[in-house]
Image 1: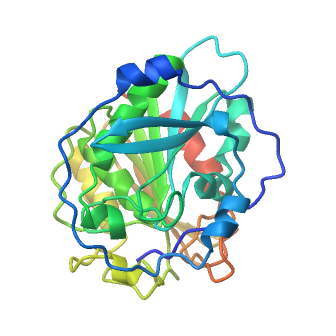
Image 2: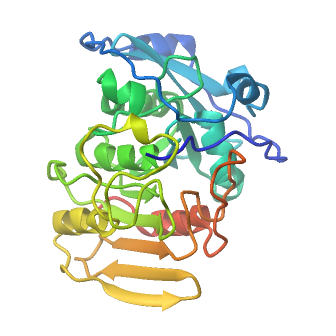
Length: 339
């Protein structure tokens, strides 16, 4: 299982003004889903970062945080928006890894730096856990931790979050994109396959599929990143030996390329990818029908980290510099609106 992906670091950059959801709008959007069956929680070794340290180093203000009721729970996210919103903008949803939170995902990926220059909205949602906004996870089916064990409906939450953002802020519904790391990458696959607001493209980082996912509702373009030195989500599949390995169930993840196979089959792409190698990258590209693309980067010196981003904890793998995943996926997203 993916270790806790990462303690927030100060970004050292100014934060763009945020267009938030008004209390009245939030009230109208409140959804009460059916009660969840709570299962016993297994104590997880998901993060070596103390709760107090995470709280001290959060890079956000109360006005950035938005909440909504879904499934009997208060769910939250951080929204970053450019100044002077005058037209519908792309929305990028960034999912933290197991044991992380919204501030953690923001610091690790650096997506907020693109908000003003590229004119996009970035949402950093929070998973669920036992300890406030620390040690949070997503229910990706076979991973991870609290969210999986308590059958949290994270698909309903992200759908409701998009509704809330779109009500208060102009969103281009043909340019909704999702990325995430580790447990967040696994959740990215699940969202793209089943959510009501179908994304145009996804970019899971150091994640996996498990082989029993239902067919996606429709084709989605996918840009996938994995590290060949990742021992938490191994290249060839199976349970890894990361800090959070006890947060999985008994179903092992498939090998890295199974993610590409899953999305290329949904899009009707050719079965065998074209492969190129340069520097520390192995690039697989499936030949797909017009309007859809499925690609996978194997980072040869990459571990369980966001390529080109920041490591979170001292015990976390150092990110490879072979590619900047954030820059690469944004270029991919821009080229792939929803058909």
